[in-house]
Image (cartoon, rainbow, N blue to C red; front, side):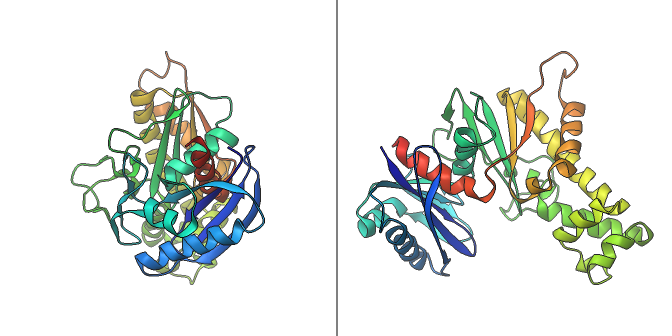
Length: 313
């Protein structure tokens, strides 16, 4: 199969792109994400028609946040779009006249990194996406492992703290409540409130109050040596690294790939994650260690991965 289209559904925009067999994007377009489930389907179809106007494409891959069934056709549950057992494959196929594959967005991003990014050369890779929440994907034996019902790798909702913080999923103590962009901001606000004298740079980048701290302020303050910002990243990394150590016990990959918005911070976040991973890896002094790598494709990973999964059929 030659050219395919990848579609990445975001909270504010839908991105579509024509992708070749080498993972290169030949044409793209972005449209605002409508606020109704049916409107989203129409917007996907419009975006597909726009990017395919000057290219002979053969299939479409869609990355959607939420649970996708084992047939890669129906979105069982998508909290941000209010899809419940939405027959996305059939509805988009009817509008665009092309074969459609639907995939969880984190799975699509993981596949993109495995095929064309940091995972090249590895047969067994675990990907996590550190953004507002925490997602992931499993590639073992060069295959994307989706589980019997299609909803594997929801790493963010592994319960790491019994009766811990309430999660948006309705459970308590989920990993993403302690290892995500949202968690990083919470750590910084708490520490700035407790020790404002150690957060002068951080507070100065916002409105002067702990409540005004945003993620971008924490990154900039950490680069400038702000103790509270640096400590907040260390706390985040402690939780991420310990979780990766648990995943190593389950899957024993050769590499972990860390993507999502927080991975853009590079060694500021990756070095302490690696240190925490080594600290918590059971039998770490006696066993080989998986590499902890930064994702390479950035925001393109989901689109490229979805397109390639459509090519795989």
